[in-house]
Length: 152
Image (spheres, rainbow, N blue to C red):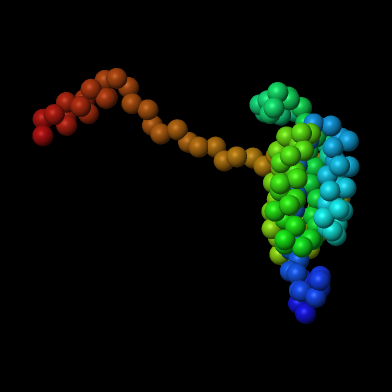
C-alpha cells in the first residue's frame, strides 16, 4: 500500500495534501469550515486562525472579511465534495483549494515557522542606486543638431 493512501471498503483510496485559503464574513464561519473538514475525514497539518482584513473592493456587499488558511490531507474523492460544500456556505466570500505534495507541505510549515519568528524584526531599507541624468541640450544646441541632420 502506498504511503499516501488508505484502505476504505476493501479499496485503496489515495489521499492528497491540500491547502485551503478562505475569506469569510465572521470568525464563527471558521469553526463551520473546520467542522466540515473533520466531517470529510481531513487530517489537519497546520491552521492559521482567520484575521480581519479590509477588502480592496466589496465582495458580496462586504468591505471587511476574515482571511485564514489550513494545510491538511484527505481522500482525493472528498476534494470535490469540499469544494461544493464551501460554495454553498453563505458566510464564505471566497476560497481556494490547492493540491500540494508532502514535500511542499513540510517546506510551507518551515516557512510559516520562520515567518512567525521574524515577524517582530524590521528590515532596513536598501538604498536604490541613483541614476545619472544624461547631458541636457540647450535649445540652441538642439537646433544646431537638427540643422546638421537636415543638411545630409
